[in-house]
Amino acid sequence: MDKKKIGVGVGVMLMKNGKILLGQRHVDALKASSELQGAGQWTMPGGKLEFGETLEACAKRETFEETGISLHSVEAICINDDIAGEAHYVTIGLMSSDFDGEPQALEPDVITRWEWFSPDDLPSPMYRPSSKVLKNYIDKKFYIPQK
Image 1 (cartoon, rainbow, N blue to C red):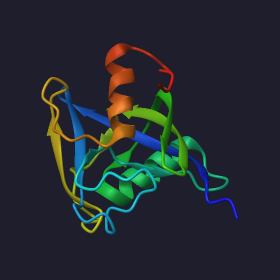
Image 2 (image 1 turned 90 degrees about the horizontal axis):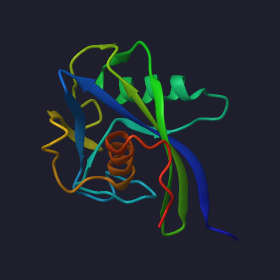
Image 3 (image 1 turned 90 degrees about the vertical axis):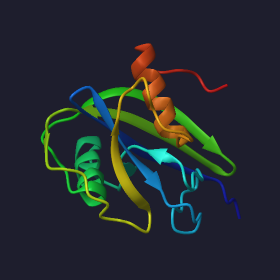
Image 4 (image 1 turned 180 degrees about the vertical axis):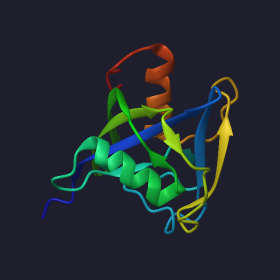
């Protein structure tokens, strides 16, 4: 049986007063489970697209479930290939500055805290899919080929 996993995910870059919202994934790899790994790393809100769900609906659902923030609109800013081990996700980077609410750690077993960061002073280590969305945004590129 083939154990390779292919999927689609979204990463949502929330911008407020020139800062980006990032959450720290739980240090326990079992709690911060992801086929793309990332325990203890900083990430944007996001997750996996469900069957029949639009990208915008996925972004709104994942952001609300993880942070309690209600998105009003999102804009697609990039697309990336994220490959690790047996997992390959196509990640759609979305951005929004049109939202209500303040971030809360609503899934503390996955994301332990949310903080706002200047693009010039980002935390480390960064979750690879989120890091790539940020790089696309900063470099003004829609797609950067996988190396």
